Amino acid sequence: MKEPILSVRNLRTYFYTEDGIVKAVDGVDFDVFQGETLGIVGESGCGKSVTSLSILRILDEKGRIVEGSIVFDNVDLTKISEESMRKIRGKDIAMIFQEPMVALNPVFTIGEQIVEAIVLHQKVDETTAKKMAVDLLRKVGIPEPEKRVDEYPHELSGGMRQRAMIAMALSCKPKILIADEPTTALDVTIQAQIMELMKQLQREYGMAIILITHDMGVIAENADRVVVMYAGKAVEYTDVKTLFNDPKHPYTWGLLHAIPRLDIEQTRLYNIPGIVPNPLKFPTGCKFHPRCEFAEEKCKSEEPELKEVVNGHLVRCFFWEKVEQAKKKEAGDKQ
Image (cartoon, rainbow, N blue to C red; front, side, top):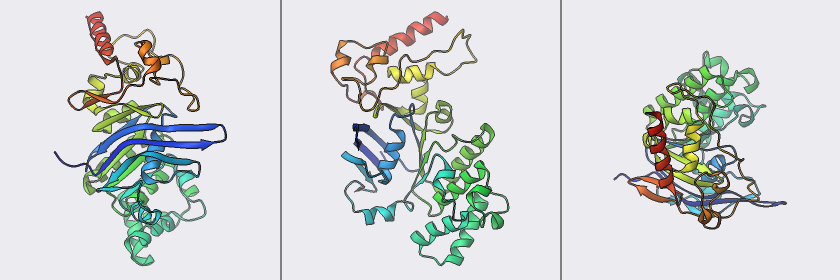
């Protein structure tokens, strides 16, 4: 079996605030392999973005990785110096942020921002770097790149800004590209174009992509394997086909049930009861138990581990077999 280029084990990232400790990421495990797309999915506040910021070690001053390992190319990123991390960040592991208007610096042109990344990591002069920046803008489908390279972020449309962010991220041909909600602020047509562009560039560069989203449709279309997160924890981890055809965690089952279906008659949409818990006051035991229709007393006091229940399919649940029974009953009701 091939070795992963990135392995995250028992990652815990906490924020120390005036109100208390926020356990934003509280036990996440996954591997990333060359050339694949790993999807990380879950509701807002589940810890998806903090996981990606932890990998790059760009947390704010209140955030701290308190436990776990992030092994990239046989090096644990949690243990190396900031100087060593700077050489990896942007060059070997790059990131497309959720909102390009915030991530791009408004006082520098698009070209200046791409050139800075190229000069820093590739040790070429600015003239050569600017030519490379124009080529990158052309590659990501920005029209008139010779003109756009000298424009400021506010002069570009949302779709163009996102493409410029992708060009910047790809400027050093990274081994891993982290895409945090890369299509959230874009209309549906542009979303499809951006995702297709990322797939095309992935094939060309052979890079791995970590795709962070709350959109199960984006996951279905683009991911090879999926980590489902809830309240800072990975609750299910398997390949994308298995996840959609055979979910085993009650939360995943609920997420998939909440998607409108055209192939069956629906009188009303399913919704997961309750709300996402406050990270300052997570429930005891299994964090999903207050919203889970299959929960028992054990779930209120004991926390389940992420365990392999079928070959390659990991689930954090004591009673995942109840989901199996519910699926069989549902299939029987449809017949």
